[in-house]
Image (tube, rainbow, N blue to C red; front, top):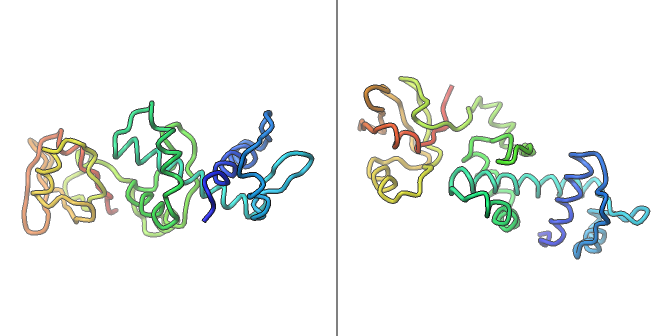
Length: 209
């Protein structure tokens, strides 16, 4: 596993070299630079560290994890902008490949982070296209007879969570919409439930086509 110092360097170089097609104006001196060269992830050319082919792949992975972490922290955990970048930096180093795939699936394969930067796609994103999986959207956006599976609950309100859990609304649960008015009625298993709009807004579903 690459240590965080090397990953930070790879992330910065990837953003400059691959995404912006330029080298940073400031001279990069990172603690992880020498190790990146030793690992053949970067090379020193004319006094500047540049990514090797393997380094580009590794840098892409770090950027993807960072931006997925931002999306998860903002959309699911409701972390405010003041702490988003700092928390995402810590989060990216513990998101292993298998975990970032699960996070991406959970979020419905988002294409951009909260700052509008593109999230490099992973294998799961291509699989999602093959399987014709839709983006995750809240229950309140559904049409009658729509079916899907619960992706996540976008709430930190314990009362809302307890109420939804009591109904069996958990990630991975199959759900079918019956009607939208005057309340949102849906079926889970053999049971039907009705919720108001505020509760329907926090139930995010991965809809089938």
